[in-house]
Every structure is written in C-alpha cells, then in structure tokens.
Length: 95
Image (tube, rainbow, N blue to C red):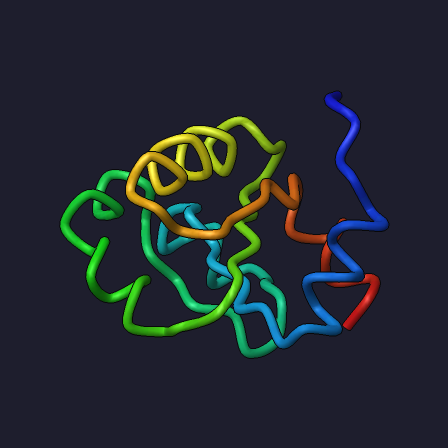
C-alpha cells in the first residue's frame, strides 16, 4: 500500500477541504467519510466544474488509493488543489 501524507491530509482538513469519494455507489453505501462528496471515478471528467465550484482544497479517497490517485492526477491537470487521501478510512480517522 502506498504511503499517504497524513500530515498534509490533516492540514487540508483544517483548511476546510472537501473529501471526494470516487468509489462505486455500493462501496460508498457500505461506509464513507461523513460529509464527503460522492463522485464515482468515471464521472469525474464530467464533474470538473462541480469540483471547482466547491471552491475548496480537495482530498480524494477510495478503497485502496488507486482510483483516488487517478482522480487526483486528473483534477490536478485541471488546476484543482487536490491530494490523494488513499483509503477513505485513512481520512476518516481525522474527522
């Protein structure tokens, strides 16, 4: 498992960052970070403006960190201040 920057995650959360969960509907229904936004990975390209309109730093999460990594790389290319939080439980522990 990749090493996620937990200090940066906490810093982003302190700054009011929004958590975006890119897992499937079924996975999200099983548990997620309270107050997180849910945008399934394959819907991210169609939701760039939605994410930008949040006007906040973003932490992407999924099950293992792979899909959130893809979302992070993609949204970074569109000028969004985003980090990969990895597995949702990794971020949830700081909520």
